[in-house]
Length: 286
Ligand SMILES: [Fe+2]
Image (cartoon, rainbow, N blue to C red):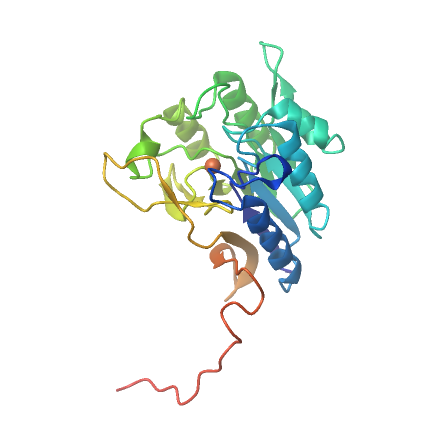
């Protein structure tokens, strides 16, 4: 089979007119580096998944910055919102991304939940945003939608992408908001063994763990990384470590189909880390 390559990027935290986030983070510059980096990957990814917090403040102007930068991204891309996003503003700036309409909820607002069916790996985006809250979750309507969508194609290998991970990260300040409906979500995932991966954002660091019989991964941030402080009392703080992306590869190797997940640093410029260097005189001591 031809490998299917998914680039996942997350948590851009763009500001209007490309202003610095929190007065220090040039998040627009980081996203431009990410776009250039993805465009130079070989093979070129088939699709880019963007897992939320595209804007820092939800301002319409921040999405205009987003649109301008993503205009040069070569692969097709799909987005789900994060807690910093304003869904109506996002939809207004990307009207051709009809999937952002998702479905209507009882309060008259739309949940950005959708399935992308035309790749070898089925992609299901779910909206974990709870309006006005930092933490996320899945209400009963969104959980029913997910269960029904997964039930329709039980034999199709599937990845679910979403902003909030449905588990604690160990980074204290991020764990104060418990994911609403996590046990119910786990019960749904456990019913559907075709779910190869949960692909999340929000934590601004590479994390992975087992979840309900599948594997859950968290994508590093583009705009900034959270400080790797695993104390319960860790303050909300970030650090300008390099941005990074995830490459998920759905492929067949050594005679078995598999979904691989690699994390890659995004350089400021193509030659930031120098050229590539060949190994030589490699030996395996006896
Ligand atoms: Fe974020």
